[in-house]
Length: 604
Image (cartoon, rainbow, N blue to C red):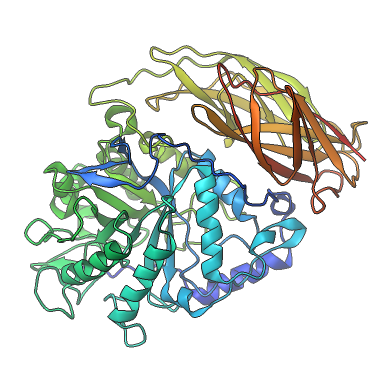
């Protein structure tokens, strides 16, 4: 007998948590990005993962027919009585999305409820210090627009998930007395129309976790989830035929039960039939003992029995090349040894990126949020630092560049460890590092810079400046190299650096460079300005070392003359207190090498 899945996502609790966070927001949250929406999209025409996606057999393909893989994260909150993704009581939404991208996730699954269409407004939205300034006064649906646009600008995809009929809780069926099927379909088609022409939104998950009495293939229009998914999916495709339609399983088929939304045993016999070909993706949820105990966890052969369990319930659809499979939710607190073994086995079953590339099962981990009571999240309770242990379990199946990174039996050789790591400079709030290039049998594509156990940032070159640090504090750094197949080197030898005192720096500020995204021939970057004294205005200057050309910017006024660039603050982000930071973004083009420039910062 299955235990029902009871997730601790109570709306009143989350509002209480949000109110507490608003009473005393952390200084780290106050120093997050204050950038406004960029005026130019980051997406590069023809890049792997571009445009709308479609299916072919078990694979997902982009608009250039290149194999792609969803390797993402769930960021919940729209579906609760906060009516906005959680954590925005502490941080700016742009910094959240930037961090998701920096950790190697390429897709955000956004749960919502049908309350979204009632003109609801966000609860516990922090706009202090310029955070979330462009969300102020918007209703929740307009906030979703902003998050979609920012995800697009950052190079991420979005899947919208109809998680609940209203904010009070999940429902077994796709309709309730208050939200009938007609309203459900109307709202789905409204979203499909709203985001037509915005291929960052690749599809819609029709309904979250159907469960008993929902059936599959029984033929009763009031209970047969497969038939309801056809009605809704075809309505969505009539409004926007380019979207993917994600259809979850149910709980029980022919007396055999599994996780809510995780049982697709009936899909082989009773497939979902859509009017537009190559748009169906089957979705499942799979959890560990921190959500509920199940019989397979106590099997004497565990965890060797798990591939058979997954094959029977949903994996056969992938194995038999019937359709793509997406594990839309899976997670655990990792507190028990059983859960640790389960997650390791599931990641292996999803087929590691380095070995199989995009010919793999797609996934979005539950969750980004730390306040999921029975799983926790990738973020820790401070909503800023990363649970590196949990994140590390997913490293083998991440696919930040979307595309295939090797075929079966492909590149499995990791790069050499970076050598010569050295501290090249420091201020009260920054540490600058350099190292010698790693070598690889195919080629190194980037480096991950770790501050202790935390991923501080990434670089494509052999230098990095870590911004926003605390004065008079010692930090330890290591660097790891990555290749195109996703293989990661061992860590470099660690170095330590101590930041200067809080009053230092005659120029009044320092500036740090971070390359966010790069393709041929474009890139985006973030420049973080940190004040060493009280400022009313600041100016950052640099000279491009390799002929790069600025094309657009946001949160600063920029001008390029020949190879020299000047960036000055806008009216809202020029005033800084000692030790605080702000940031601005830019987009440009490059040829040859996209070497990071040396920045100088002066303040008045």
